[in-house]
Image 1 (cartoon, rainbow, N blue to C red):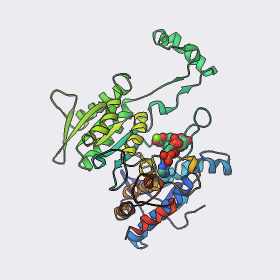
Image 2 (image 1 turned 60 degrees about the vertical axis):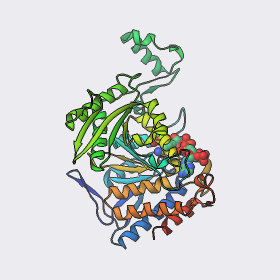
Image 3 (image 1 turned 120 degrees about the vertical axis):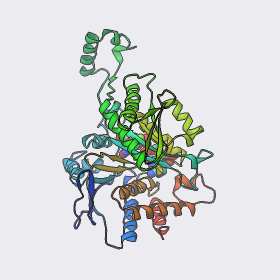
Image 4 (image 1 turned 90 degrees about the vertical axis):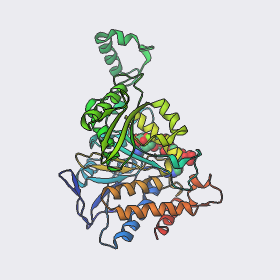
Length: 413
Ligand SMILES: NC(=O)C1=CN([C@@H]2O[C@H](COP(=O)(O)OP(=O)(O)OC[C@H]3O[C@@H](n4cnc5c(N)ncnc54)[C@H](OP(=O)(O)O)[C@@H]3O)[C@@H](O)[C@H]2O)C=CC1
Ligand SMILES: O=C(O)CCC(=O)C(=O)O
Ligand SMILES: [Mg+2]
């Protein structure tokens, strides 16, 4: 286990991070392919920091446990010490963690986001020149997803078919809402779930998306929802989102609305909405029309993998889970543990490496972040890539996970 020895904690006051030159940064290696990916990623991030600051700055990595590694050594899947470390040190990074389908533990990834109230899942999607993709104009895909991270069906309010709990819940429903209960097609054999979507949760997510669009000079924020069917949850999200644009940013309706324009920093930003199924086809046919995207938890999950595929796959799709009010943030890949490739030193470490790049930028270490991007661009341009790109790229050289990390470091020069 790598232990921090000489670092200092990051602090957060008056809405700003105070980052020492040698911050302690907790990390979770992750299950499955996480082990290989983390090794390669830590080397790349350290190399970028050394190159950018020649020893004046460094990251004091502190390993914290979660998932199988935690369970094997502590009997807990998500030990309190891990949560404490992320709370104390504010900014951390993690590899993927396994969640069984059906029964078993609930997602540790989702638990971390919920316990720390990391309400924004920020997933930028851009194309790196040369990456093989299934679409004709991948350079037109330049979107930033703001996925709501704390509510929706991910809140985990579910009752298992056949359980005492589901019977109790159905009884309540039948008594209090008989008309709704009648709509359940097969009441005796249904599992049931609840989808909470709140005005508060929507407001803070949409505000974060609009603030980002203003700061980064982006053209539009699109609210993606299925509000025609789920009127009071997804439809609520759309309506509350527009309210934020109108009331908090002095918006003006376009042609009677609901599209709204806001003005900031001498620029106009359009706040618009689209129904999720139409969005999923339009990101393929007209990607240039979309920029910043604000959406609920489940839609955001689907959209992030779909968009990642358009620019080369989830092997290279980064992300960060952030609470802009408390200062807590955990950066992590979009992909999972890909267990069939575990410990083969095979998969693309790009997603965690670029999540690290986002983390460096979040710390204000832009010089090091720029070097990571330069290294990734260089390694791809030289066609020295992992299996996921190599299988689709003519004339490419196949590298292992660790070798791709080394290639990125080489191309920082
Ligand atoms: N935040 C997190 O920690 C997440 C965890 N998970 C969890 O991960 C587990 C496995 O989920 P699964 O649905 O298989 O999804 P995965 O993302 O783990 O893998 C699906 C496919 O994506 C491709 N892929 C994934 N990672 C990489 C990589 N680093 N480089 C290149 N290609 C990659 C592979 O495609 P190919 O077969 O074509 O090579 C792989 O078979 C589940 O338990 C799930 O809950 C899932 C998502 C996020
Ligand atoms: O928590 C999980 O296992 C899946 C999470 C996921 O798919 C995501 O964060 O995109
Ligand atoms: Mg996902």
